[in-house]
Length: 464
Image (cartoon, rainbow, N blue to C red; front, side, top):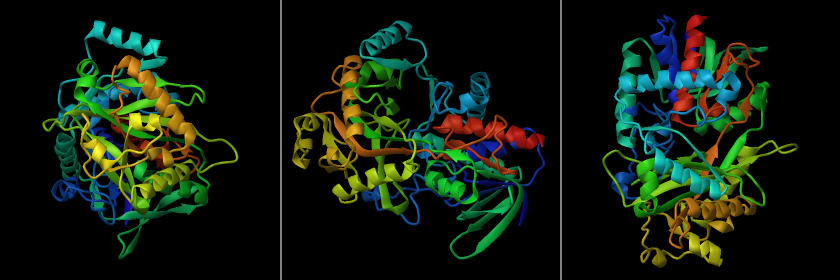
C-alpha cells in the first residue's frame, strides 16, 4: 500500500493535518490509521452498567476518531499561554494567529459561537487580586465549550468531510513500527491483530496523543529519534459543590491558576474545570484506571470538578518519567482494588482514611458512583501530595470553601506527555520524512494546541 502521507492517530493533531491539506488544495493521497473506531461507533457502556467494565482491547473514551479530548470536557482554550510549549518552538504570534484560524474551522463544523471567560472585568480583577494575595497567577484564557456530547457531533461532521474529500481512514489497525532506511522514514508497519501490513509513504506523521506517549517514547529509543525527557503531571481531580465555585464559574467558566508552593516549588496548576460536570474514569494500557472530568452542554450535576496537577521534570540519570507516573497510578489502583479512589480533604489533613458511609452524609456527593473511598496519600508521592495540599489551601483564599473538610479528591489524575521529540521550527525531526505531532510529541497539551500543530503540519505538507 503506497501513500503520499500516512498519519498514525485520528486525534485532533492528525485530523487537522489532513483537514488543512485539503483546505490548501493538496491532491496528495492521505491515509489516517486509527486503532480505535469511527466516532459514530464509539460508545462507553458505563451509562448502562453504572460502572466501568474495562472495555477490551481499548477504552472507547480514550481511543478512536477524535481522540481522548473530545470525549472528556470538549473545551477549546483560545490563548497561546495555555496548551504546552509549542509557542516556544515556532513563536507565540504565529500560534495565536493559528488558534484564531483553527477556531474558525471548529465554528464551521458546528461549535458553539459563545465564548466563556470574556467581560466581567471588575469581577475578574477581584479574582486576580485574591490570587495574587494567595501567591497564585491567574491565566487569562477565553474558552469555547464544545460539550462532551456536542463534540462527538462536530467530529462526526469532520470525519465525513475527510471521507467525502478522498482521505482514507483505516480503523482497527495499530502501528507497530517504522520502516526506516538509515535516517529516512519510508513508512510504517500496522496490524489489526490478524494481519500485518506495510504502508509506504513519503511522509509519516505520528499523532497518537497521550494514549500513545509511552509507545512513542520506546520508538524514539529504538530508532534514535532525537528526544529529551519530558514533563509528567501527577495530581488529583477535585470536586466541590457548585455553590462554592459559583462566582468563578460565572465570571471565568474555567479558572486557570498556577502556583509554586513551598517547600518544593514545583509548578502546580488547575486544569480542565467542569462546572456542573461529572467525574469520569478512563482506562489506559495494562488496565491502568485514571480519573478525568466530563462537562456536558445539557446534562448538569450539583458539583464542579477540576484537576490539580503537579509537574515533575526529571534530570540525569533518570529518563523514564512516563513509567514513573504509571507506577504511581498502578499503586493507587491496587489500593482501590482496580477502581478510582476518593478521599475527603479534611480526612487527609486529619491523617485518616475516608469511609464509604461518611460520603453518604456529606454535602458533596461523588458524581463518580463507583469510586472507592480510601486513603490516596498511601500511594501519592510525598512531594506531589504536599504540593497539592498547599495549593488547595492557597486556592481557598481565591475561592472560599474550596479547602473545606468535605471537598473530594479523586486519584490518580495523570497526564502523560511523551519525552519531547526534538524538532526545528519547520517541525522536522532528525529522521527525514518523519513528523511527530500533538500531545504525543511532548509539545502540546489539549484539544486546541494539538489542532493548531496539525494545521501547521498540514500547511507544510501541502507546500512540499
